[in-house]
Length: 112
Image: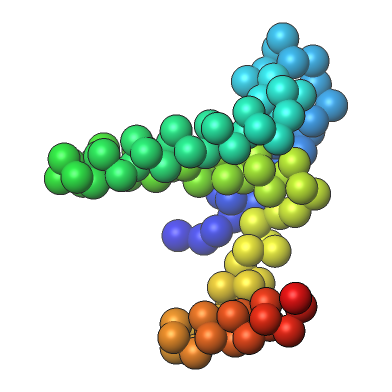
């Protein structure tokens, strides 16, 4: 399975930016603004957590799909694409999570 579905969805989301909010859920969410998108991601995150807690694998898959979809909307809101996230994941590939986190923490300390 290829990440092309992410790219196709991102393209659709991008076209919805210019669509009437009454005709598209994505357009409505994008036109509602940043806070509405963040609230939706928080909601989907909570639903994913609860599905996991319930131990229902298919429910976890469905809720994760909802979460990823809304994260794609957030990326589009910021002018980003799945390619940006995939590039970051590729950059991290083979790097210990502990080492990667320490490098981010060191960078943040240097910025303050």
